[in-house]
Amino acid sequence: MKAKLSLIVGAALLAGCAQLPPAPSINGNGAIKWANGISEEMHISASGSTLTFAAPQSLFNPGGITIFSRIDSARNGNCEHYYSEQAVKTRMQICDNGEVTLIVEGQVINVGALARYIY
Image 1 (cartoon, rainbow, N blue to C red):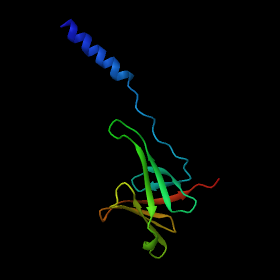
Image 2: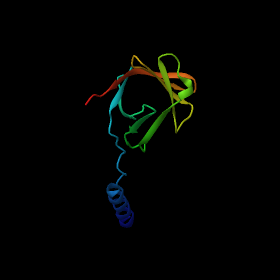
Image 3: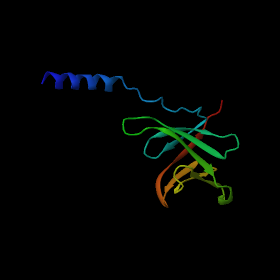
Image 4: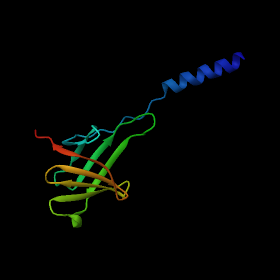
């Protein structure tokens, strides 16, 4: 019984010392405020051809970088279309008036507004 207790305590101490890798970070120059109240900071490339998001790390999410690339042939009026390089069926539409629509497998998942930081 004493050996089992020592083993459990030792395992708990080792688990407490384990460190998660550092969360990715970006130099944000814009953000999207979603209709559900969540704001996501992002980096908009100088050409506007890529949008980079850093997902925070949590117990259930390893975190990471998500990059959306512009689909140059899909410009529709005043809106540009982007696709996620990690999940091709995830798309984002951004219009000149700042309206953002997130689409996954053809279904609208969220809408929001784009804000670009001015330094």
